[in-house]
Image (cartoon, rainbow, N blue to C red):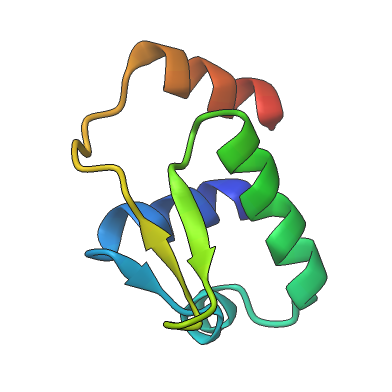
Amino acid sequence: ERQLILYDIFQTNDEDTRMSTIQYHLPGINVRTLQRDIKDLTDAGVLQVYFSRDKDAYINYEKDRDISYQRIFILIYLL
């Protein structure tokens, strides 16, 4: 469920997503746990984001927001 919420956060934000925004939606979850979840979703190809130290935020470089069947399958598999 946590990873689904993370996915939704990144899909509804325009481009930059700060950790404080993520923690607002997932209160009480350790930052390191959230970072691991983001890495897992990125490694699986479900999210296309990277962390920018300059902006202190995750940047979504996926231009097309359509979800492919492969990404849906991967997301379900991770859960």
